[in-house]
Length: 294
Ligand SMILES: [Fe+2]
Image (cartoon, rainbow, N blue to C red; front, side, top):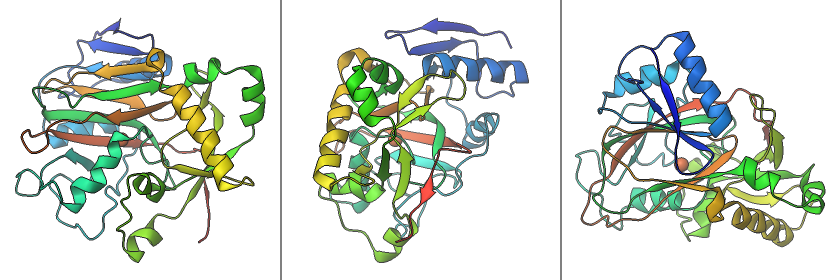
């Protein structure tokens, strides 16, 4: 399969032309996608909407998928295959979620800057989000480049954060929005996880920040001090020069490398429009994670 790489908008996003995610790909094409992700961090592949099985098959070219999707264990009815994460505002009957629905309130956390699954024992490497239906206005996805954000820090800050270990929890990001309605079972299932704040990427060898709204503490630091530093770095990283905004079309596959980006969903009229996307999540083998016993 012969593909063309076109940089788009910012210097860390590229569109891959000529790649059909609904068909098998050879090793050379897979390697080219990986190399493009190493260079750019965000990749757009436009095309037709494909089945869940085809999306899963495409993602499996890049590694094992996260098999445990979903945090709300009390909401057991799934709308999509277990290998995929449901990124939509719809229930299992494909009706729009009520604005007060617990799943909808939980999903609002996706509008905070975050990386996928940094709060899990095995973090996410690539997220592959495929659009089944999109909104006629708003509802974009934004991605920011944490390598460029790191590069632009001054030397004093780089030295200050070099050896910091942050603590990530899904309940930290949800608490920011006042959503703390979790069962003991849900909280036990996802204890806090330690992550280095600065890391070197295996593909490009570039240094990057490892940040998310899930980060709520730093080992050995008072919480208030830790949260101020995390906030300062996140505000720095979310400056316009580091941000790509994706305007969705049906059939798009947007891929980002969670090891060096943060992303967020932008709001839209959820009472009026259906936004239906499914995410395959390729896991990262080694993200420097350490399980903290509760
Ligand atoms: Fe996400």
